[in-house]
Amino acid sequence: MDDAVANNEVDESQPQFDARYLKHRSILVLDDEPGIRNFLVKGLGKHLGLVESADCFEKAEELRQRCHFDLIIADIKLPGGSGVDWVKSLRESGCTTSVIFITAHAHLNIAIEAIRAGAADFIIKPFRIDQILTAIDRCIERQDIKRENFVLRRQVDKIFNASGMIGSCEVMNHLCDVIKRVAPMPSTILVEGESGTGKELAARSIHDLSGRAGIFVPVNCGAITPDLLESELFGHVKGAFTGAHQAREGLFSHANGGTLFLDEIGEMPLAMQAHLLRVLEEKTIRPVGSNHEIPVDVRIIAATNRRLDKQVEDGKFREDLFFRLNVLNLQIPPLRERLDDMNLLAQHFIDSISANLGIKPSMIDDYELSLLLDYEWPGNIRELKNVIERSLLLDLPPSACIGGENRSMPQKIPDSSHSLELAEIEKRHILKVLGMEDGNKSAAARLLGVSRKTLERKLAIWDSQS
Image (cartoon, rainbow, N blue to C red; front, top):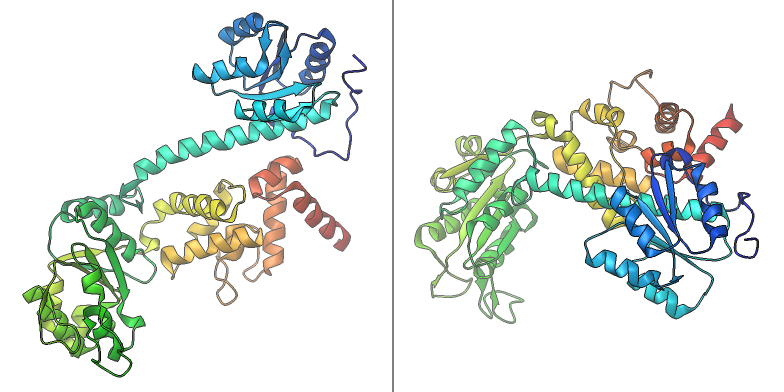
């Protein structure tokens, strides 16, 4: 026993585990050495809800049939066969229980074989009990994240009502139903809504559900200078203007057979509006400098954050083009009118941005959600996404990143004044979460989405300031 395993003392230099996080977990230990089994059963039994042991495959299978195990700890070399082969057979039978292999034979080929079999971890004898506990904690945490992601994906399948549109509130359900109905039609569509509400996402959804063979081509009419817009849209022939050293196709040609999304259509100059109206009526384009018409099959979706009918009244937008574009009208609601979707949207951005940044995603809690709901969100969905990304980059709660440097924080912050410094808001939030977890730093760090070391560093700073 002493040759195989070190004593049961915890090495403070090793990463610590969350004992409360493990107390409801069950472990199966498979090892033919009585000393190892007794050591693990005794050491792990203090921290886990159930620890069973077996000295052979038959006994292990009997135990597996009787109860569920969150994790299996198995020796690689056992009488009657290989632990790796046994785990392979489990995988083939559909068992996905995570496995930590232990062995006294530290050969590279054995480690590679274990990893290929799906090992969650690989520990060399002799080992300390805190090493095993840390490995178990890490393994179960990964396992829980996978399960949460699986559930989240199923939820996402339900809430992505139309090709990427997120929402389950009444107004979004209606919008997505309309998108599904109009998508297969060839008619032009005018998408209206405030900046940041997701007008381009709605347009992409329409294209994705349209069945059109061509691609989706977005263009921001306000981002292209008036003298270049015609060339960008229709293309030009060689020598059409100074600098046109060769012919070039325009965006209409690139979108042939697909969809052209004209964002900020209200910014289009009046002269270009006349050209666009002709294209919509004739289904042909004429490249700059050319005398020939080119037929195109392009579905037009236009978008604006302005009142085009008001621009028509002011003489800034052609009335005939407005009626030609406004065959089907979609109104994208601002975020303040769909607050029931706040939790879905915030969690979606947390998960997707965390994946892009390569960090562990966290779950948004009720307190943070209440602060997000109290904000007006003038920048709509785009602002929410930016707030979430800023919070992840700065390792702060989302509410602490609302408004950037120039806007005020949400007004309804419990137990706070109307003008708090960002650091004070962060401190109050962290201490509130720590209190909710009865002072458990590991659990609080997990809820906050930060490392325990980061939490302890902040607490140490605040202690020194008091």
